[in-house]
Each structure stands twice: as C-alpha cells, then as structure tokens.
Image (cartoon, rainbow, N blue to C red):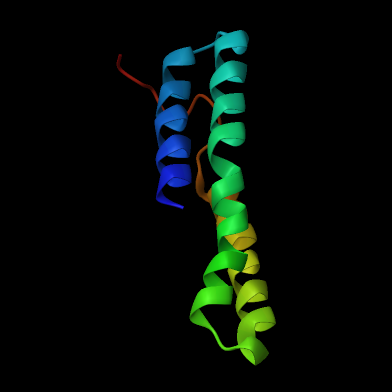
Length: 89
C-alpha cells in the first residue's frame, strides 16, 4: 500500500511539471494510475481481511471503499478551478 501511495504521490507531483503539455500530463497521469492505484484500491480488502473478524469484513470493506470515494469527491469540490493557482517553477 505504501508503494502505491508513493507512486501516486511522485507522478502526481510530476504532473505539475507538465504545464500545458497534454502529452506529458497524459504520461504522468497514466503512470500514476497504472503504477499506484491497484495497490491502493485492492489494499482495502486485504486490510479488512487481516484486521477484522469474518463477520465484520464486509462492513469494513464497504466503509473503506466509501472513504475512498468520498475523499475523491471532497478533493474535486475543494480544489480551486484551473487557473486560480499560479505555480512558480
């Protein structure tokens, strides 16, 4: 799970270097999603399988999955629109 989070973090930061170059942005986003997201999304079922008793695993898996979805929604709502942040590189 840490490998997935680290991969997503590195390529998400590298996306900032892409600027307005769509091809570079596409490559960095693709590497972040292929290299990191399978570890993160599949990690919830492994975590609930190891930490919770059998009768609570489905609930733990559901709460973990909803937490990911709510986190994505929260990120989309709270991030300012494109152009509102000026990066100094």
